[in-house]
Length: 526
Image (cartoon, rainbow, N blue to C red; front, side, top):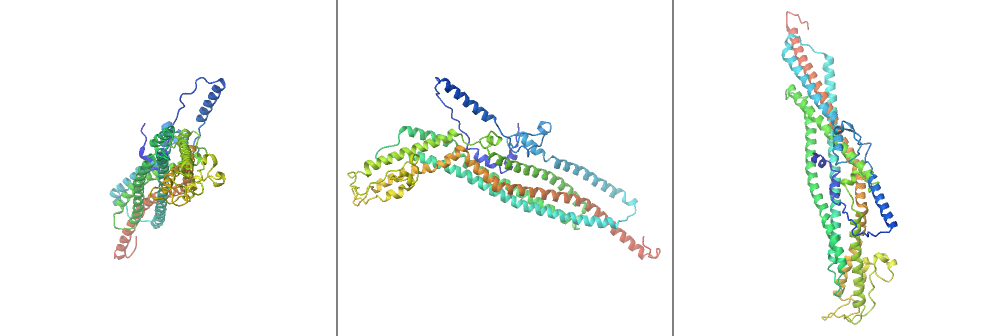
C-alpha cells in the first residue's frame, strides 16, 4: 500500500525516531539448551514463555482520545488505533481532519465564481436599462466593514508571521537537539569499540589478554559494527531534510503573508482594476483554504506525537506503536557489550597487578627502590572509591598515583633515583589503565542503552522543553492563516459592494451637478 513518504518527512518531531530507531534490537536466541531438563525446569521454562507472551500481548494505545477521528479508509468509522505514524489508517484519519477546509475551498470557489459571473452579466447587460443611484448607508457600511476586515487581515498576517518565526526557531532547536543526541550516541558507541579493539593489543610483561576474551571482544565489535555508524548517517540525512523543509515552509508562509497584505493594500488603491483584483483574491482565497487544512493536519500530528511521546516514556517497555518506530536495544545486546567491557576491564587489571608484582615491586628487575607500587583496584569487586579500595588505587586515580613512583633511568634503563617504575613501564601501564578505566566509564551509557533510559531522557527533554513551543507556535500559524483567509474572503464581498457604490456615487454626483447647472431644470436636483 502506498504510504506518503513526504508526509512523514514533513514533521520534524518524528525525526528523532528515524535517528534513534537505528539502535534497534538485536535478538540472541539461546542455543544448545539442555534437552534433558527436569520436570521443574520444564515448568519454569513454560511459565517464563507464557509470561513473555502475555507481556508482549499487553499493549498500550498512545494518544487514544486525541486521535479518535473519522477514518476514510474504514467507512469513516472513528479511528481507535492511537498514534502510529506507520499506520495508513492513522495518516488517513489525521489527513481527513483537513476535509472541512477542502470543502470550504470548493464551495467558495464555486459560489463566488457564480457570484462574479452574475455580477458581470448584470454589469454588462442590465445597467443601461436601470437608472443609477446609490445608498449612503450601503456606501458607508461597505467602507467601514472593508476597513475592519482589512485590519483583521493585517492582524492575522502579523500573527501568522510571528508564529512562523517562532515555530521555525523551535523546529531548529529540536532538530539541533535531535542531531546532537544522534551524534552523541554514535560517539559513545565508537568510543566503546575503540577501547575494545585497543584492549586486544595490550601487552604487559609479554602477556596478552586471554584468547577467549578476544573472542568476546570480536563478537561485541561485530554487533557494534551493525549499528554503530547509523546514528551519524541518519543525523546527517535528517539535517539535510530539515533544512530543505524549513526553507520550503519559510518561503510558503512569507509568500502568503506578503501576498495577503499586498492584496488588502491594493484594495484601497486605484492602481489596478478592481475586477482583476477580485479575481486574484478569489483564486488566492481558494488556495489558502487548502493551506489552512494542511497546517491543521500538521498541527494535529505535532500535538499527537508530543502526547504519544509523553505517554510512552511512562512505560517504554510496553508493546506500543512507538516501539515499532523507536525500539530500544535488546537486553541481550546491552548485556553482550557490558560483559565484554567488564571482562576486558577485569583482565587488564589482572595483567597490571601481575606486572606490578613481578616487575615494579621486584628490586632486582631495574634496580628499583623505595615504597612499593600499589595494586589496581577492581571496580567490579571493590567499587571505585578510595575508601572501598583500601590500600589499592582506584582506576580513576591510578595515573596520578603511579606517577609518584617513576624514577630517572640511565642509558641502560636502570633506575638511578628512588622509584619503582621506569618511564617506559609507566607509559605501558598508563595505556592499559586508560583502556580499563575508559570501558568502566562507559558502563552508565551501556546500562542506559539496555534499559532504554537514554531514549527516555531524550524524549522527556523534547516533551518538556520543545513540545509546548512547537504546539503553541504551530497553532499561532494556523489561527493567523485562518483569520487572514477569512478576513480577505469577506473583504472581497465588500470590495465589490464598495466599488459599485463608489462608482454609482460618482455617477450620481456628476448627473446632479449637470442638473444643477441646467437652466431648464432650474437647479432642481434629482
